[in-house]
Length: 149
Image 1 (cartoon, one colour):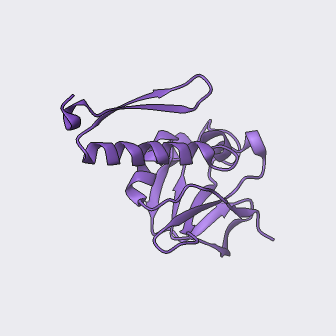
Image 2 (tube, one colour):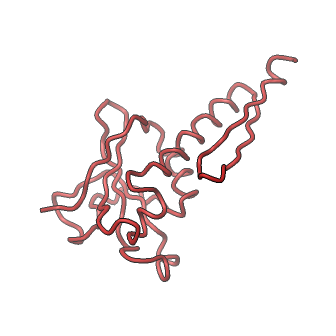
């Protein structure tokens, strides 16, 4: 039996580079091409993925319990999309859960923010980001240059 759970989300992850940026904001690194997710039972054949996110080796000491576990990046339900899968056992004691949220919601929020910032920059807009006291992300998009206002 595996502890690895695929996260069901409304967020469609399509851009691995933006996911990597979001992961860095959570203190994680992307390891491309690592195809097994490490969790409670180690790295098992059935816990396959395309890539993993993990706490960098130099930061694991003092990061808390299960700091060597990983988040797998797996194929999403739609072509060209990715999903996340990881061992959430241990709740608030799990170092990954503390960094990304119980269902990866913090990582997904950073991914959404990075996606919006990229789209705005492509239009010539500037974005100001503020992390609110409750941890939510507030983005302000300035369209002045693009609209000539």
